[in-house]
Amino acid sequence: MPYALSTKNRESSLALSDNKRYELFLSKVAEFGEVWSLANEEGWVTVVTDEGENCLPVWPHPDYALDWATGDWADCEPKMIPLDVWLERWTPGLDQDETLLVVFPNLKEQAVLVDPFQLDEDIRAILEQED
Image 1 (cartoon, rainbow, N blue to C red):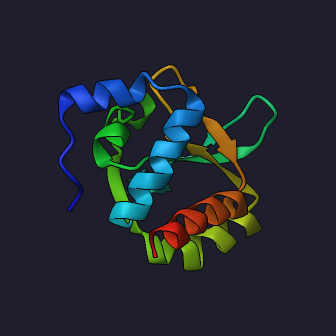
Image 2 (cartoon, rainbow, N blue to C red):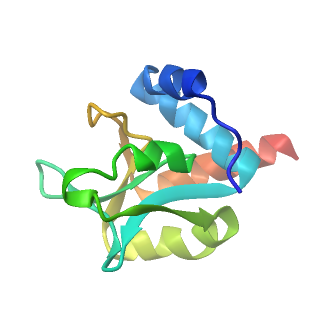
Image 3 (tube, rainbow, N blue to C red):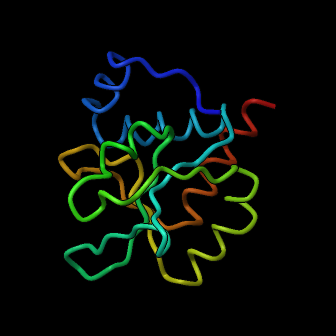
């Protein structure tokens, strides 16, 4: 069950810089143990950068992902990946598939782009601070 997200908080989060949204993503994922993306019957949604790199968009809450479920992605729904599963299986799998992560993109398609192991390292650093 995702945390409560007011419209005001959602809008102010989306107005943050790419780096601030990345930091917010890390803190929310560490706090609530959930990574969200979009999927349909065919699988997970990916995007391709101008350089031809395959990328998976991820968000800290399903409402942000839902904003992207339009147009070609209208048949998609937000899907949650538990953080422990993300760290154990998704990081190595995404790395093996040479898939980068578009972390917390806003509706202008702006976001931090990182490799799976960088995101893994940053999440683990936050989790260690909390212990």
